[in-house]
Length: 137
Image (tube, rainbow, N blue to C red; front, side, top):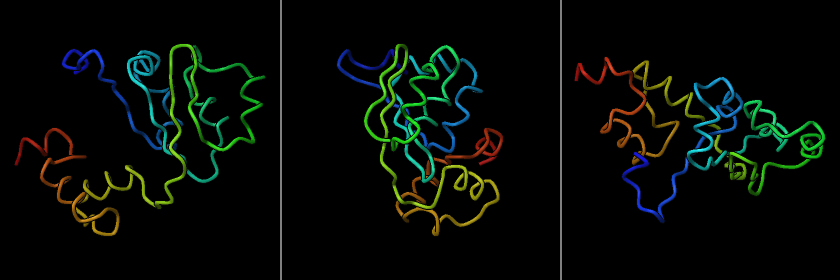
């Protein structure tokens, strides 16, 4: 996908903090973090220290730096060697992609989770479905 981008194009990965906290467990997480900027959507109860502590070991700032972040809200960019993270302030939405994925997986309605236009797009593009269920359609 990156090869299709122009020189001035920039690739971003939007993710909620609830999912980002497991980023270090992802396959080749360090390489992915280096390929694009991440936009991390804040969730209540998380600080900038939680973001920094979630990074893979080779990208994680030292304890002295992380300690400074403990009382800082998730805001502003966090630029580290090998990764750039942009913090999206708390969205005040009480829904996560995990909840949407679960609803789609069980064939449930999305109306309570997302606006109608978003629900229609998810259905049209068959998002959040496993590859086997896409082939059946």
